[in-house]
Picture: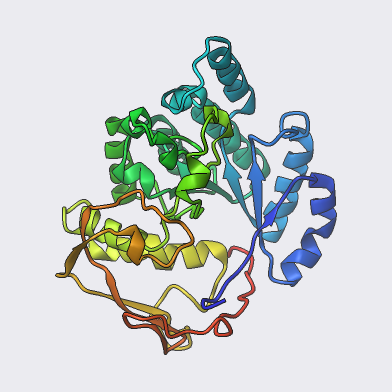
Length: 337
């Protein structure tokens, strides 16, 4: 790896995870990931609650993908029965109700068990409002994450012939949800922005004949996250530069238990990004380093591209990639303080 890295553990077998959790924490894996859309989550809910209680005792953050599987299956089946299988119907298959129902349940689980919960890629105004209220109550230790696409694009993308390029879970929403997402970033409802980067190729996403529920979910976001947030957020007075640093560096490092990261201070790793606040250039997939051959923001004029990146004080990028694949190190995660 050219960058330092850490891991979380995806849980499909809660009893086994409970048994192994103390050793995982000692080894530096103090983070879990749970998919409420998983095939066995509903019937294993009590076992997952046992896992959350174990996580609470050890200070392990539980990341949760919150969508209700039963509502999604019901919506998808109805659309298929009606012959509505093209990508334009993808948002209807994973409605806001599915996200809100799952977020409400997840917040209840966090309150009941005391587990620190990290809700990933929240997409709708209604879900964000639930997180806002939970934070105000002080009874739930919850963190909210935003996926970049939900700040910049709306569901109209799925009406295009190439709409499959933007398929991810949850789907893109309405403009009102985009506006709510920016407010949530500014007011602290959202704690971090995470790319959910999946570098599929155009050919893989646009494979002919795929119904909406068979299109591989995920979009490339990695290299554009910072300049898009600077350009659309800081330059348009939606965010302060200090808030941007909190969202992308300080708070993610704290939640993830990466004590040497996230701040500029004595004893910390000198991981720094120097961006150019004046240079504007268009997004071009051909100039990216990802395996993906398209970009969701192709052609957008964007300001704030990185000029220099330091990894532990050494130049990793200065217009060219300088770090070798041997430069990255595993960084153990510590329990949440």
